[in-house]
Amino acid sequence: MLIEVKNLNKTYYSGKINFKALNDINFSLEKGEFTALVGPSGSGKTTLLNCIGCIDNPDNGEIFLEGENIIFSKPDKQAELRRENFGFIFQTYNLIPVLTVYENIELPLKILKRYNDGEIKKMVLSILDEVGLSGLDKRKPLELSGGQQQRVSIARALVKKPKIIFADEPTANLDSATGEAIVDLMKNLNEKDKITFLFSTHDQLIMKHARRLVHIRDGKLSESEV
Image (cartoon, rainbow, N blue to C red; front, top):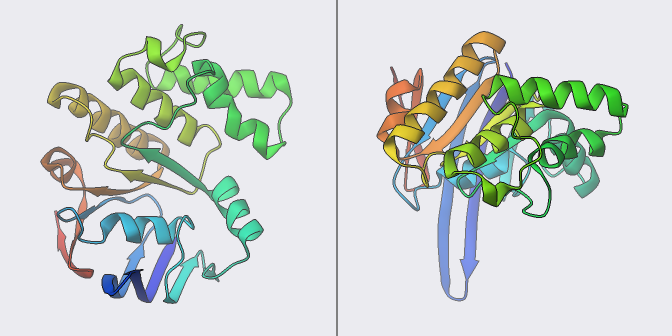
């Protein structure tokens, strides 16, 4: 088992209003899955993604990564988990505009401090080729189309070979044709390299391609196989 979530709860407090974002969530994910958390805005899907990815902390419950409980780890431990094990793809791309495509992708490798410059160059150029962006390594993000920027963010997430990639509404800012190409790219990477993907989405395009749908509404889960 790659991920196992047990009895997870999360409430947001705002003045006199308490919002129960996650309500006793139980969920598991095997290595190599291509799974979508599906629900309307405010359903809790992004909150669940962020809790599993150690971006946010739940109120209580347990989250296991390959059998190790990662809930309420110290901030430096959570940073290490994100750095070593997780890749993230966001709907707004979150690229650094002053850096080139190459520099954006090499950044997680530089942070790891595990590879020399020659190894990093080989890894970056290889992943650029894999996502169909060869020759664009010297461009800045704003010199690219939205679909190309999302491919850069996918390459950045993939380059360090994470155990799981969390994709939060990755097609939300793309037209349907570009979105289809991005989903096909991620699905091919999943099938070829056995990379695990967990999406949060309400996009029918991703739902159509996912091999498993986990529905969430009002912070509660229900599941359907596809």
